[in-house]
Length: 252
Image 1 (cartoon, rainbow, N blue to C red):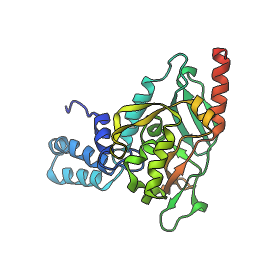
Image 2: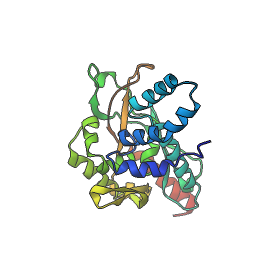
Image 3: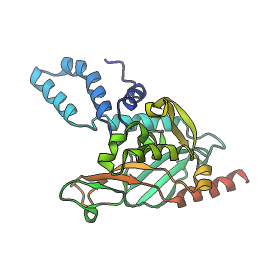
């Protein structure tokens, strides 16, 4: 047995190596593969099988994303169910609606139609091929990485569009709507300031700023897969509805 892998520590290191934890996971995937390699070598029935597995992991720049999403979900679930809390603990979208849950509002969901990501497309594809925003990977932004940590990964703009300064500006904007700065996830370019963490529905509604999300763009036909990547925001309506519900529940 390996004793497990500390994904939070891996993420913290990857943020210092040019990743943001959602759409850019090149460093994190290398660290992930490095950590697994000794156990793969021991468990594989022969060296050819071990080489094939390691090549598969090494060739996939997003191989660590699913473990990262699970780790972010565990972090956010630890913050859910706190009486009186206005912090967003879940963000998810299914290609039709975008939904959020709030820590102090239990299992209630707030949903509205999702938006179309704005970004860059792979050769041969365009906006006409794209599905509206879809996927569970927005749990990364919910946990304080992804779009919220873009300042750590200026090179991501070559994938999602924009200029390196846009990456810095995106992170700075997210400080306006979050409650805290992460103790473990820090950004070298910002003097190791913690990433903006804990989306607060009060701040979102007051400022009119919605979260910025780095996302893959999926084809509208099932089975084709990813056709690009870009940026998207949730609809403001869900944060307004959540704040109204919060006020009603707690008597404000």
